[in-house]
Image 1 (cartoon, helix red, strand yellow):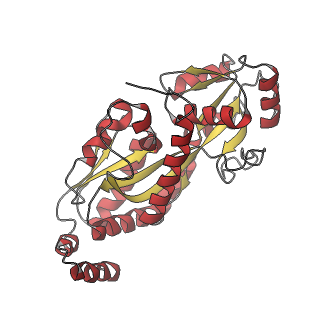
Image 2: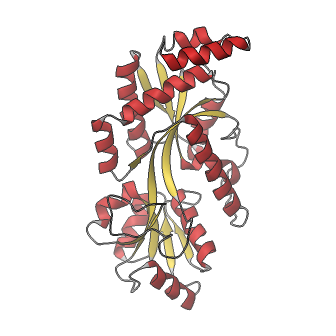
Image 3: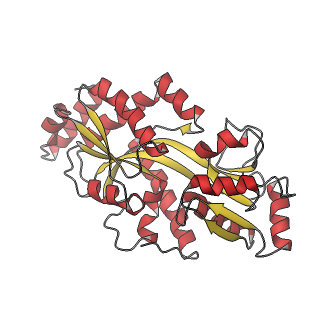
Length: 322
């Protein structure tokens, strides 16, 4: 047991906690990381990348299990209801913060039902336009949309996803009227943007970068606090006149609520160790991600901001999914 864990155990003993013995022997059996998305997708690949490094470091199997359905809610609800012993974890994506607002009868609360372990990575939304559109930057795009209200269209990977909400946030902030064309997945949304059947789209950097480097579609803005290292010449939305505009996908590790803090601290240390591995960093950044890491407390603060951001938007934009 390392020094940090010993100190936490001393504090816990003062309040009569029995969790130190559990933490000291943790892990003593295989760990499962539950993913709410299909095998081979970005979240699944991130989970397997982290799991492999954790397994080597912790000396126990770390298995990834896919529980797909209901926009990842099946996986989230399963982990929220699991025993808080550190052996059933969730590798979630950004929709966990707004799914309870757009799906009916969701049985979890992201801030109350889980212990945030660590933010693994973010993938900012990239605003791209068709090469058939005359707008060369965001200011020109907004001006064009204001001249032709209801005429320009944007594609998304589906209603309720991060690209859809990013576009709705832009509509709200810029005061423009553009038409949503939802697809069943990112590939259809991208293909029709490349073909010029729709005018614009927000895409996560992980799905966008391989295509944007070809120049079709044309990236005009990044929805993050800083420019994306993989697209250094593309300005942020904030730089183009909309301060504080952020919309990004992300992957983070969660444990069920009431998981002993000593176990959360150990898991956090293991995730951060994995993220320092050059192989892990190279694979994530080469796919367009930004490696994050940090403390469980900083991840919780990030989640609070995400819930506030999208909760505020969804009070005005009605999105309802079954």
